[in-house]
Image (tube, rainbow, N blue to C red; front, side):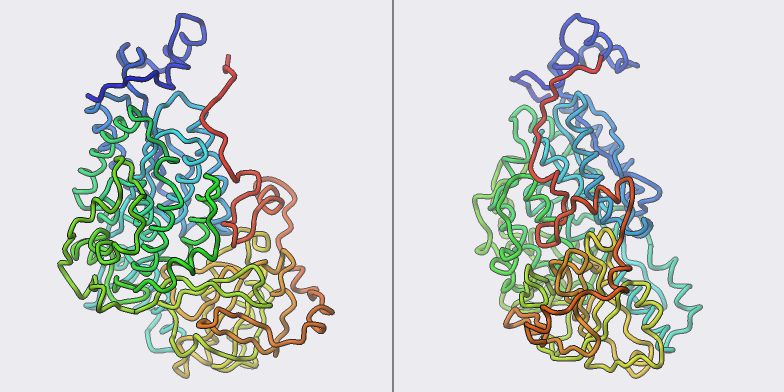
Length: 576
């Protein structure tokens, strides 16, 4: 049992003989012994995003039970606290619309309840970012348990990467090279077990980055969801959080500029999702850490890609785990990490790496033989993206990273779906597909639509990649030469709203440029057309109205301006 030498926050609710303390204790008793309220046992919330409508998180009740056992063993009082859960594959119009709402509600539930620390259970794409954003804004001791990836499914004798192979197989159906009924049969094979996507999509990326940030019990991130070692690590996390409360070790002690440096290095080395950019920026914003879009290019763009996983490579997440896991990757780039960054156990991240072995050098490459020599996120600027845009070179076609082509413009996702397969559409393999109205304000919520399917006519001719540009996002499981997060977005007055079909666009990733080859005076004289304006969201009430009125642009993390920063854990007024 961990000794608590300082007064616990929960005692603000439970201590004393007054009416209010009586109410707080009495309604929580329900079989709980009296010594749970005497100030010696910290009350630990288990922020649980388990939900049948967030399929990747559906197993987290079992994980929560193991956390509970660890908290009890260490002398704490575990409390299950269901919080908003966001199912990436299910929510319309996009789960990203609700990330900030989930973070806000999590923040208020942590702050408003009689708890001393919190364990954050997440898995699906937006849940770990929302949990970290909320916990960072309160500042109580907090630790993440990533729910872990699913096991690899196989179909017709081949391994399936969830997400990545959806995009690949669906294009083969459109090309006529795969029967539609066989595509449908692969559904049950692709999702083999509980857990989140088994590719290096956003869920896998954010689980690993949570550990690189220092917010996970070292060695736990990336453990497959069905693996018993996830429950073992969850139990240990329950014990750890009680010790963290005794040490008063909170997010501000762990989440520093140094830890974000390490997360960016990790993002590049694992070939992680582009979505991590907006999530890391938003988390940093809650802590007042000066993290910018340019930091991703400066720190990570020339880091070698060491993990050969889909969508940038061949293997899947359970292969990464058996090959040595995250520590084996980080040991290869130890010299690029900031050694001052701590983890939730109070020791530096680098101290946990040792000489972490690589058990399969095909899955995890040694530093001298990377998958790619320079594979981190590249930040582009130019007259088409004054505040920046990003591209993931590791998932792109090398020959297209320097390209000049005519724009084919779509004013909304509905416009795109209506016209992309029109046989009369003037488009060829050199064209640049431009989709606008998909940014934080415009959609609203910045959906994962930027990896636009290519025109059926070209797919049938064997074309599998084209330059695509969008103010929205793409799935972390997606691939292709896709320029994302163009800022400012079209709906915020960005130049993307002024592009016309036939304009020449120049992409130069090596030069970090994205330009519209139109004279500046002509561009200044243009105004958005009626179809563009009609495609922008115009909500009149509720969360969507609040979101559109207050959301920041992608280059700032797409948080709400009213949520940036922290409010701490103090609640001054009583409820009775």
